[in-house]
Image (tube, rainbow, N blue to C red; front, side):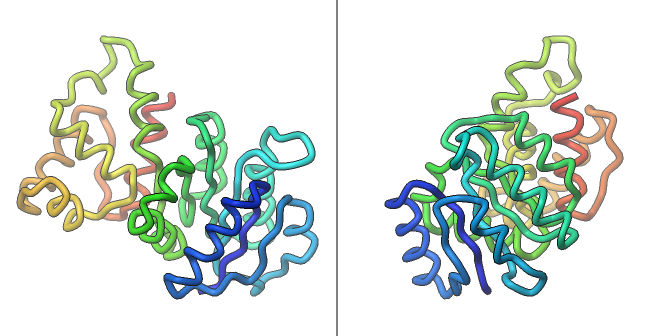
Length: 214
């Protein structure tokens, strides 16, 4: 799998290159800014991109703009955006770019190599991956009257794993329950939130997050 990287922190960029190469990825290009990446990008250049949210020249949302531009050139082009802080407005805009191949993670997740690589593979495969901290902050901002508050602790835990892009089998393994129990939890979650269930992982993530950020 060929991956493009845009990250202005030289140490992190070098670390990403070594990490990905060590996990069997091909780094098709690596830059410290978004403009240089966009200047060489063409359809077929790579299979996915890992982008920092804040890069030169303004250090605001260059990575987000780049992700959206890449997806405008190649519909549903897989992008995994990294951020030092939870900025859910960026996550919301990224989700609005389409239902497939989107990821938003905190940079601290890169240190958990297995989780980071798994997230990148899921995004490259057309899945949707959201950092659990984003979900937690969105949850904390809802009023006590919102249906989200009716979720049990276990249901909220399952919701967070769903938002990370995990399927029922992986969720069952993560929390040590049966797949039948996971299906029941997910059914309860969607019923309480008034959302139509879907067997497609990225669609149910998008539906859930759309409700959480409304």
